[in-house]
Length: 408
Image 1: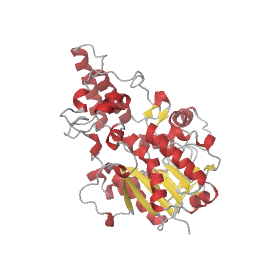
Image 2: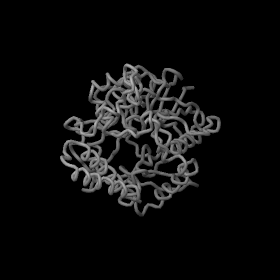
Image 3: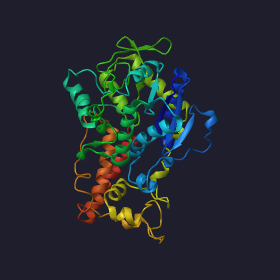
Image 4: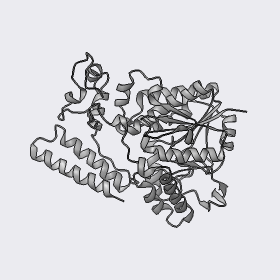
């Protein structure tokens, strides 16, 4: 019998969602090992014996040179994505897994993994595209097909890899690209791990694109997938039993907005949404959902900005002088922190924050939050040529941040 393993990657605030996922895996595939890949500290009172996880894999235990500098160079989403390839290889190496499936923490299984395992009996890698049917409306093309062109053809919230030569060759390539180039840098053609995997069918022969509608159902494909059923009798997609659903976009508000647009009369999908909200709450959403990551702060407690991370990532002189940029000390042990050397007026690389783009499907809350970050950045850049302009820009940022905070 083959050894089947699953894993997800989180910071502590996503622990409730990871619990929902892991419980669903244990319900439908109880013999599957579930690993929690954590780029953070565990919250107080956490007891693995009471959890649906079999093991915890800490990001700092993965083979990364100069871990503090590497972590500092990633924003939180980039970090949780960058460790995915390293975690995959770790599970193959440390647990001698035959098959490994990655699931994003905001997913849930509604059937067994048998069909997915059968696919990995025949193929070394299985992927799910965002869409498997062409859109037929202008809104569908803009919201879904164009987003696939922008963010990646395949949704890397799911991935399956078999422990065979071609599967390991893919895993090692993906690990290396994510370790070195897992960035949300759309002007450079990067969106964390997803855009890289656009290349996978070009590089690897033994790869299967799963086009069956039961896999990775989400708001970006419900225009072409009819979800029906209930919790008593099970769920179907285009008449077939649902395998797993992706509750993507809850924190941003996109999930609700896209449901209203593409499935406002589908009682099944709204019932699934209410169930998911209740399950997350059951597993600690109110208590844990706003916990900041330990990597969000310098050692002295000051919050790290995206600008400080991006400057560090692009400036080798800072990387040399401050091998641990979280610390209050420089390379020579003197009291001289990276934070003190990055003055607000420093200019980022030309393409960084050079363009503000808004996805047609973006939630209002996300747009306001991104705009607040943009105005904060401009206020701290060379473009704020005088104090009045700086105060005005900071005011805009404050207003938009508060709008985002209180948006439904």
